Amino acid sequence: MSDSSASASRTPVSAPKPTIGIVGLGLIGGSLGLDLRQRGYRVLGLSRRDRTCERAQERGAVDQASTDPSIMATADLIFLCTPLDVLESTVKTLRPHLRDETVLTDVGSVKQPIVEAIAPLWPNFVAGHPMAGNSDQGIEAAQLDLFADRPYVVTPIAQTSEAAIAQVEAVAKALGSKLYRCTPAEHDRAVAWISHLPVMVSTSLIQACRREQSDAVYELAQQLASSGFRDTSRVGGGNSELGLLMARYNRQALLQSLKDYQATLAGVMAAVEAEDWPQLQATLEQSNGDRPRFL
Amino acid sequence: MSDSSASASRTPVSAPKPTIGIVGLGLIGGSLGLDLRQRGYRVLGLSRRDRTCERAQERGAVDQASTDPSIMATADLIFLCTPLDVLESTVKTLRPHLRDETVLTDVGSVKQPIVEAIAPLWPNFVAGHPMAGNSDQGIEAAQLDLFADRPYVVTPIAQTSEAAIAQVEAVAKALGSKLYRCTPAEHDRAVAWISHLPVMVSTSLIQACRREQSDAVYELAQQLASSGFRDTSRVGGGNSELGLLMARYNRQALLQSLKDYQATLAGVMAAVEAEDWPQLQATLEQSNGDRPRFL
Image (cartoon, rainbow over all chains, first blue to last red):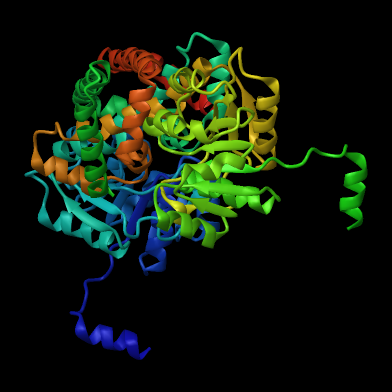
């Protein structure tokens, strides 16, 4: 108790916490709700399914949840946690029920097309991307502190109000996330490199093995595969829906990364073909030096 | 005690255990020594360095070790645990000190060029590949049970004597390994797919990111990278010497896998370019189905 009063005396009197709305109560929406309720926010949830609303309430991820969008009428800051391909229709459904000052934000893994689609529908929109998650899905997978120490990227545009950005960033800080701010295009190019390209590179590895002409060798390869293959193939053998959405929504940036990758691979192949071992060694050493900077 | 006597009564009287020689007392050689001494084999070690001989003895990986190749004169079965590029010269150095009936085997990760180089020098040679290891090196990294439940591939040729193969396989079984037998060429094609191709695919991912033209985006990518990038880039950002040796010694099989990979990648890119989402989805789903067969 003495700790908390000491802390209160050091910090300015804070504004009342905004009422949070969460649309889509899956892993991300549910985890947001758990964290924010624990930190004293009032949380309202919207889901398409009654059962999900019930479970979100039982798990303590929301104070109240409903399948009726009018539940969002009293929310000050709404997190859109639906899949990318239903975000636009979700906003259109919500719009008649919201107050003009309500801030909308999303959690989608691609930003440029989302900003282009949503900003014209709702001026008080701040695009965002909390970079957390795991291979699980649904409200049962929701967990506390999913976003702690993880990047949270906010990608405002010229028209985005500073007050709206500040509201989203305050919540991201409350979650314990590391805040980044950049343009939607910068975000999309960065995640093309580190998230979407790896999926295509990795799925191509699994697929390429099918070209082996000897059944005996293909079978032996399966039997001998270990940690190297397991790690390199992981994201390419994962959730296909997620991989597909990434490619659809971040197609331009992904294509550019794929072209750069193709050229790089051709260089590695040329070194092996020409037995240019100093060149290959230099490449492998450079990779060994570069990799820690990404981690 | 009753267990062991019951077991003894069921099994035939076994031949006396061969005296084991280990040439090269690093992670693999040292771990072999630890396991085999624990299982009652007499183990002799050969290293280039006095200090390594001392440490191998102190750690219990050998009964006796020396920098003088004549220590191998009384060995029945010798494991060559040196890097691929010094195997041939090692055998030439050892040859004058060995009895004709001594069996030589190696632990190299490529088999065809090794068999071609060593079999003419020593008819009693059985090529092998225990598929275990980690990123550590040297006698200090040696550990018990490194080979337990791991594949141990033996790749005899027509001239290899069954008695020699049996000696190597008996030791592999004693280590608790899973035994496989195939031709040197089949081995090399299988490991090209699951071990050597992943290194090139993965190092190309790290290298491709360098082609990003915006420093801000490259830096952001480094900051946002997480488990997907970490896993896909692991083997390509690892030990560069190992990657280089793989490519040098398994060049033909690796090149074929690289060509197949390049064609597969081109197909994935074409689907993204043409927005052929059903095609991309089918690919991702097939990868999701294939991957568990490799693990």
